[in-house]
Length: 419
Image (cartoon, rainbow, N blue to C red; front, side):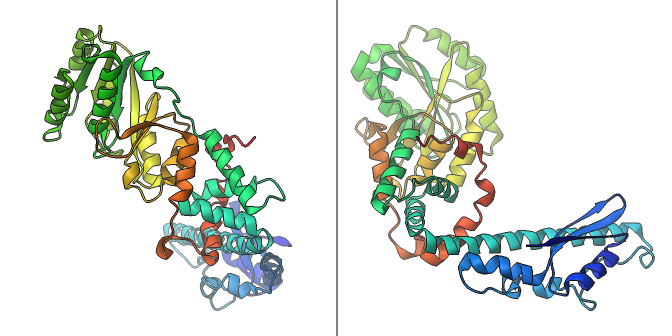
């Protein structure tokens, strides 16, 4: 591949030099202004063809690779989209606008070209390494992100058979899924725990489940319940009913001052559980809630409820919004309603959260279980998508994986333990 550089005082002149040297099918890779001159890096059309052909083990002409935009970007005398030269455009503002438009089109072309080449590369890799392609397809079917699937597939030990490769993938995922492991973290040590998260993720029901477990361990006299949910109709009433059944008083607070007073009155309790008001991850109330819990006189350990039914992108936003100055851990909710759970496991692994419990129903306290990595990873692959509309086919895999190239330097992926 021979990338050539052309410099001239104006874009028009630089494009003319490029066309004369490389022909009308040249591919522009970059365009910038340097020391008062326009500098263009370009690649000849035949070089583009020779670059693409080995990747798919067949002949691919540069017109095909650039098919989506070659009609707009063909560098010939009649169709060039260069801005007018300074001596023909009286307004400097118009010249700047035309140049910015040209730069935008060039960046768009470059992105499209990179995507095309990445797809071609992955098409070839599917044929060369079918086991890795099969494993990536399985991970995508479970709900894991394309970037994590690609990262682990590329780290797969050589000469692994499909089943051995899947076992290796599962072992890596289990090793990176941090769990509480022992309920003594909560029920023996005690302390103040606040369940936080968006609306409708099961915070109140999960609070009741934890309260019931605490009562079974230490009795109703050792437990106190607090709610900050003054926004949802019936929010306080729902927790009050649970408290009445358990024989535990429920205290309602409105702000940080109320919370401090309540915690001071309840300082002799072994365990205090706080049910907070739900708020969307983009709501300013999230930051206010984090500040209120962090500003209490005694340490409040926040447990984030993550619904298994949400997409990975949404869950990532939720974690970033609710993390604040740190989370003690998280609880996976709605496991019984989720079609796949790789999405929530991906976020927990990527964000390095400590998973305390898994909730899989409405029964109190039965539907709350300690998180077990082996069970969750095994369940994730058993729940993989089987229906055709949502399962990636072989020809779709290159398109999905082509967009992950820029994500491979993600710090959260580099910190995944492989050994």
